[in-house]
Image 1 (tube, rainbow, N blue to C red):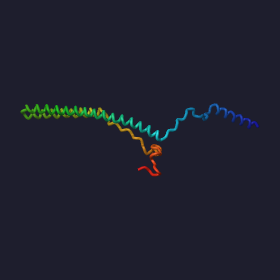
Image 2: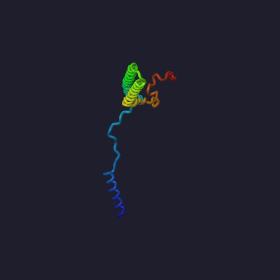
Image 3: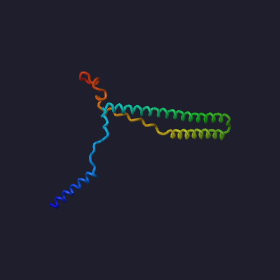
Image 4: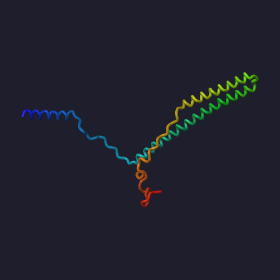
Length: 157
C-alpha cells in the first residue's frame, strides 16, 4: 500500500509538473488566408513578370544608350588620330618623320581602345532577364474557364 501511494503521488506530481511547464498544443490565433485559385496565383505571377520585364527592358535601353555614347567617343578619338596623322603626313619629308607620325597614330588608337574597354567594363554585365512563370504548372481549365474551352464536348482548335 505504501508503494502504491508513493507511485500515485509521484505520478500526480509528474502530471502537475508537465502541465505547468510542458508545452501544450494551442490553436492558431491568426486567421487563415482565404484560399486563392490557381488562376489568381498565375495572374499575380504574370503581373509580377510584366513589372520585372519592364524594368529589364529599361535597363537594356539604358545600357544600349551608354554603349552608343562610348562607341561615339571611341570613333571620335580614332577619327581625330587619323585626321591628325594625315595632316602631319602631308608635311613630313623624311622616313623618320613618317614613322614617328604612324607610331603616334597607333599609340592614340591603342589609348582609345584601352579607354573604351575600361568604360565598357564600368557599365557592368548585361542585365538578366526575368523568369517567365511556368504556364504548364497550372490547369488550363482553371485559367480560362469552362465556357470557351469546350464546345459540344469537343476541344477547341
